[in-house]
Image (cartoon, rainbow, N blue to C red; front, side, top):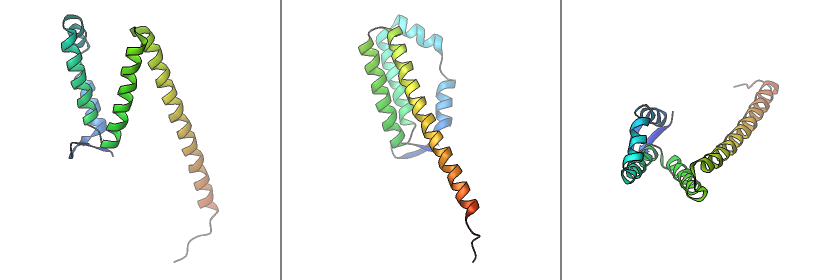
Length: 125
């Protein structure tokens, strides 16, 4: 089980933190904040993202920060939400493809190891 570390302290396991943060997400609140007070929306958004990233181990947090920087760059460069959504969906598809390929390699290695162990002579003490 992965345990999140925030500023040198051990925290709750990262998956639980992520679920808790998502469970408290109120779309209507965020939508009205974005519509009625955009500066406050962007401040709250930055705090929420920081809180999520800080809930992870330093290595995971670094990768999350890099990913968030890419997302923010795409949003700025694209200029409109629809175009940004298409670009971000493409980034997600690429990451899922990479994960799928890694899983395939892991499965192949697991099968090779299982076969090698089955073919090995019994170990005698």
